[in-house]
Length: 141
Length: 141
DNA sequence: ATATCTGCAAATCGTTTGCATGGAA
DNA sequence: TTCCATGCAAACGATTTGCAGATAT
Image (cartoon, rainbow over all chains, first blue to last red; front, side, top):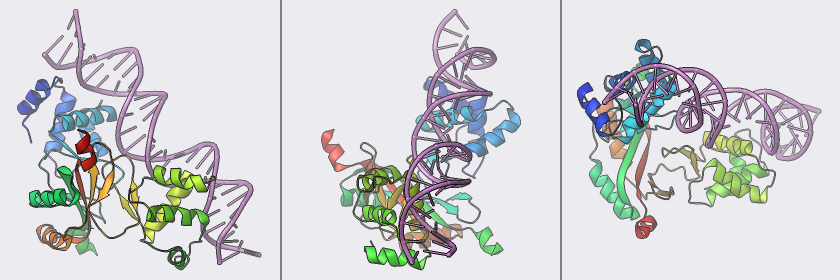
């Protein structure tokens, strides 16, 4: 979660220009907890920047991902989701309503160490996805 | 991992016909550890059944997945991978060569319980993906 | 006999790319 | 002024679908 100034600095430090579109895309990501897809970002940002295009959304999140200020999620759906919280943390998707939530915390270091021992891999990352029915959908049933 | 007879029974019990193509696709999946993509399945099975089509591969794995004898993996790549081992188990992908391997075992029950308490979800599944460099690629470097 | 399956080709959908114009430095 | 970015439209790649002919039961 960077402020606009911090974001601008990161972009410039990486030889990228600071544009209103990029600010808007990052802003949207920093202010949501819904782990939006490219389409959700586009729909939201288009309200303010009516000329916004899908291409710009994709190009923006690609840069953000490359410079390490946004992470890309793939929860097994058709489309990617994006998260401005770059701390590795588990996610859980409701199989009824499709919403994706954060899971507070899991001490993954030990687990990675164990996996490294078991497989001989030099482990440098992971993604944990859980699936189930969210509290709201449980109440509906 | 079902025998041909067991597979035939499962298919018939679900109102599906037993065809040579379906047997071949399942056979291929049951005899590999490489967690193949649809393309890898197609390439392999085409050697024996020269008329095999992509459509049939996709339709076959969809049925297998629906009746619960194949699981679909999504390790964050462009394409899905398929696994005839339906036991929930973690996978690890080498970021150099792209190969996907099984991770022996993690006691996930406790972790799911913890996630359930933290989120209020009725948790009924998970996918754990690890990323790193495999032993072979480490030696090359 | 009849419902299902195969396999081709066309369609779809998310994502990427080429390129002319526009904007940041 | 000089790149780099935007945004349209076309391209792309994995997957899905429609449908006519073939096959399992």
